[in-house]
Image (cartoon, rainbow, N blue to C red; front, top):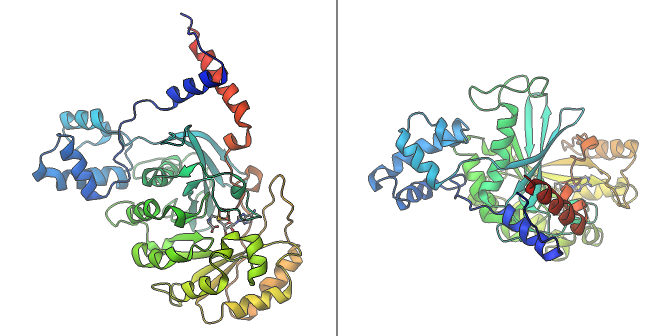
Length: 411
Ligand code: SAH
Ligand code: SF4
């Protein structure tokens, strides 16, 4: 049989859309326990009086055991499992690519359905193994509406916010791939912490501005830190923001995770250029919001991220201004060597300059680790994330995908 395809631009696009949006079953991942129980009752497969118990049962399978198929939920009757499968899904998203760096860093490219964006979207998640811990760097949006001039993600136009499920799916899939659920094997040769959890920490530092997707991020982080489920301590979850001042207080109050601020400059003139959201929420307001962060103490410090840009923000005077600006705030300063990406005009500061800068800050009493660049060979380092599909010109991508469909159409 030969499948006939209209390969005019419009036809190809329609064909793609049809392929990319199969009738999706709603997912149970990302619902609160109450929403989960209600969904089961509404589908008519669980009586009201069992809703709470069933929700608890599913919660355990989804988040403690990491099961991604109802058939693995052994203490649920076969009939109910079949009904669940008829109405819902707990499946993982599509992994387009998994790259492993020489240093053990892993980067996954995920593809999610369009959900109103017109075409499937792709995002990246990065795993960084270190001595004693494994950190997962999670994305909150496809691209970013903000345009920090040194950030690769900032050159990609926002396609859409990620849903709660899509944020959690990054964590669940990473744990699958690393064998980080009970009774699972870690792949041979994988670099992971010698003991304890393979994913012990999460940082909302991937693509996107998490505080521009507040509700979905909040829900996902509350599920990730739920003690009867994924059970990550809130002290091991860090949310990084470029400075969306109105949501900073709510982050502490309603989510209660650790805060990181992408500072990068100590005066408004320079910060306006590097982190343009500064024009809306200037340093004075940002620093005031930090001082008022709920739970702030010496045991729960704010991390200030500072990217080291050659001849831009890396002088000793800048270091002095930084110490002055943060005076009185329980803080850690994280110096990030600039990670270059194709087409950028910035350069990373010399190593000697970075060390001098770090010494000054250390002497002023701040812990100031220099973040070792990780996974540079697979463009997985901070600010280098930008999905492959975006790099390919849209018209080329459509043509390629149309060709793939056409190829599959021949039987
Ligand atoms: N949008 C949020 C979180 C994602 S960015 C935010 O801006 O905080 C995570 C961190 O990487 C931020 O501190 C960001 O400023 C930094 N970053 C972005 N591009 C970078 C690059 N090319 N090199 C080093 N760090 C970069
Ligand atoms: Fe967006 Fe953060 Fe990149 Fe700025 S640094 S463009 S806020 S992802």
